Structure formats: C-alpha cells, structure tokens
Image (cartoon, rainbow, N blue to C red; front, side):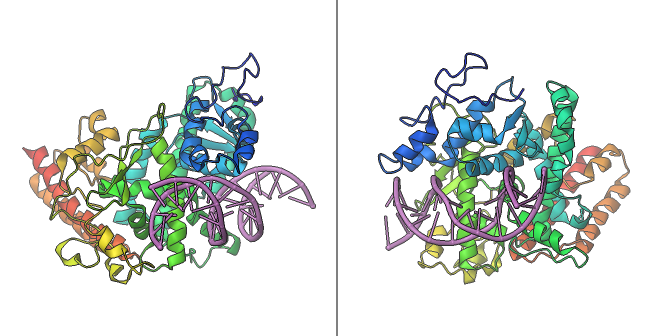
Length: 448
DNA sequence: GATTCCCGCCAATTC
DNA sequence: GAATTGGCGGGAATC
C-alpha cells in the first residue's frame, strides 16, 4: 500500500498508521514542516534541522514499516515538508544501497534494510569483477534509466503488494541496476570523462555522461571503496580523489566533495558509516560500519576516535604526498595535488589507513556481507568472480590447482584494465597479489 | 578562515 | 510542451 499522502503529522486522519512526525529529530520544526521551514529561514534557522542526514532519518522513520510497499516522491516531500529536490537526493542514495527500488516515475518500492546486505554483497562482488577486468563494462546491460521500463507494470504493482515473488523481483531489478551503474566506475574511472564508445549515439553519450555523475553511482562507488579496499576510514577528500582520478580540476574536486558530503550524511544516518576524526589531525573522516539500520533518537554521531590505531607500515593510500615511498600508495599523482590552501599535504598524511592483512576485519566484512555462513565456505577477501565455480570442483588434483593459479595470473595479466586512474591501477595490482595468495590458501585448504 | 552542506537554478530526460 | 529528475556550484551556517 502506498503510504498515505494526506497531510502528515498532527493527528491528520485517523486512518493510516499514525505517522509520528520525525519524532526525534526536528525539534521545533515539527508538524507541517514546510511552513515551519520557511518560517525558520531567517529566524532561528538551523541548518542541522534541515540536513540530509536528518531528512533521511525522517524518511526512513516514515516509511520503514511493514505496511509500506511503495513510496511516492510527492507524498514524501509533502510529509517531510521539504522540496522534491531533496527527496531525490535521499532516494538516490537509498536506492544504491538496496533500500528502495525505483518502479516508475515518482514511485519507489520500499525494500527496507533487509535489502542492504544483498546490495552490498552484489556491490562488492561487482567491484571485484570490475577491478579484475573479468567483466567487460561494455557488455553491461542497459542503463539505470531503463528501470522505468517497468512502468507499464504499474498495475502489477498493485497486485504485487505483499507478494514475495515480486518483492524478489524488485530486489533483483535493484541489483541489476546496481550492477549496471557500478560498472561505470571501471568504464570511466575518471567519472568526469564522458564515455567515448565510438558507436554510441550522441544522446546515449550524454545520458552516460550524466549517469556517470549521478549521486547514486557516486554512492555506490564510495561504498565500494570500503567494501573492496578494506578501508576502515577515509576522508572525503581522499574518496573524491580516488573516485575522480588524478586528472581533475580543483573545481571538480570541490564539487565531488560536496556530493560526498551529501552521501556521507545519508549513509551515516543509515548507520552504514559513521563520522569520526582522524587521530592525529582533527580532520573528519568516515568509518565503515556496514550494519544498516535505523538510527534512533539523535542522529548525531559522536565522533569518537575509537581505539583505532593507525599502524605504521600498514599500507596507506593516496594522501601521503611527501612520504609516498614508504607505503603502497594509491594515486601516484598525488605530488601534484594542489590544495588551494596548501595545507592538504601535511594534514592528510598517514590518513586513510588500509587495514590490509587484518583477518578479523576481513572476516567481519564477509560476515557482514553474509558470505561467510551460507555455503559454509568463507571467501577470501578478494574473491574473484567465477571462483565459486572453481570451488565446487574443489577436489582437484594439485597439479590442476597449480594450473588454475597460473590461469588466474595470466588472466589477470592479460585482462589488466587500462585504468586512467593511476590509483585504481595500483589498486588492481593489489588485488592481483591478494588473489594469488587467496587462491593459494583456498587450494591448500581444499587439498589438506 | 576553513569546512560543511543547504538551496534552488536550470539542463537533461521522460512522459 | 509539461513534468520529472538530478547535476551543479553559490554562498551561508558552522566549526
């Protein structure tokens, strides 16, 4: 059932499930928030009351109920008292982590938090395949825009309410969307570069270009950084740099960071990440939590720098400009980073630690992604696509295993993608190495 | 002064 | 042609 569109809060109608206006979060601006928001504009205006994160919490509070299947954008905007534009920001992010699926113009299917693990798992697997070059982006399916192909199924939507199969359908559609979107990371590592597929029609190119910059895709790529690189924390500057590639204008960078702020606020209100501070500088960063859930009560995450240690000699990426030799650095062009205030280099040194080799962290990831339990087989951290098939044949003779390893190596060599982004190129090398050792471990285990 | 991020313009896309 | 979608960056609130 579609969440009722009646004017929200105050004892509106006695019918549908009593919507508790943003219990929580809007002090003072509750009720018909639209008017309130305007009224507040000059007066006791607090941007915290209008933050995307808060809005997202309210959005979730509003729709995360058993009896909600579809979400109308207008309805959401009205009930939350914000402009439609803001709702787009929210749903784009929610959709890319599997909480929503777009069904038609103005209409989304609410999947809820149970959609998140699947979405993350898909994202991770997808990302690993992309990194390996084993999947050719060009083979990738249509485009996000095609979700609306379903639109003539609107009627079916009605039937689908409460129907488990269609629920699954939406989820799988969501996954397809995620996949096609995320493919574009490798397709155009520099997300500001329009695709240059020669045969692509012009309008398609424009469309691709637009999609490459979409908030949804950016969200997925941001999440992929955590999922595939085992980053524990990352600052938004660093993320932007990794996602943009090294050739970027300062203005692109600023824009990207602005978007990342938007995304981070939403993800943080979903508890997927939390804001924290890098230990030695006060620079804010985000830590991956990976357990999406509704945030209760206050949405302010204490930026507690947990007992995280930044272990020297662990691989750090990207940001270290002056001390790059000592680490396996991503983003080798960092020497050119030209922060307008010239402070960047020192402030970001040693940040964004890769928790490489930390098996407990890896296991965490796997269990969070639901990979550890289901088959009884615990994937290694860099589970290559197609490896599952090999696992099934796991009772192979040692020689065959050795051959397989060589195959992987040669495959990796021959398929090494030509990333424009040096950072990703380096990252790829990291994966290849990790695969080798992972595969060795797996084959060793299976024969012992 | 630097960082964060809301806001709304306006172009692209879809209907 | 209208409506929807969403990229983008100005600039104000906050740190």
